[in-house]
Image (cartoon, rainbow, N blue to C red; front, side, top):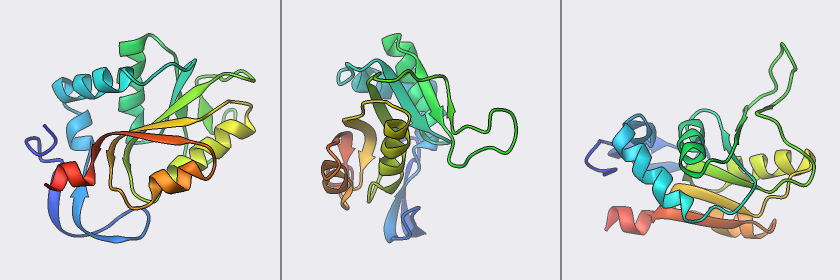
Length: 163
């Protein structure tokens, strides 16, 4: 489905991590298509047993929303930066001390944004030990997350996607 909707592209790309790549996975091409987003949510729901779902803007928010609808669990939107107005917070959706939260991601490479999200949620009192991702590029995210006690569960690996 990812290939058919144009989410996988080949060429020369610079990733969020700063790494160079010969392929790019644009999950937004998939998550803006309801039939694909529904499949992603259904597959991810099999791995959810937490109190809440969290996703960082922009790419993970539609996935978190769809997973919330699929599971009936509330979700938290995580801002990349503190907003300068209103409550000035980075979390939207509410979080109580001790709640368990599963983080969803569109694509992981080194795990940098996942780790940032884990740390932010933990600082706010959440228990986080799992990240669900649509595509793991298999470039260190699983290992980096394991170092902070978090399991990475991917629906598709780079190996699966490219072979």
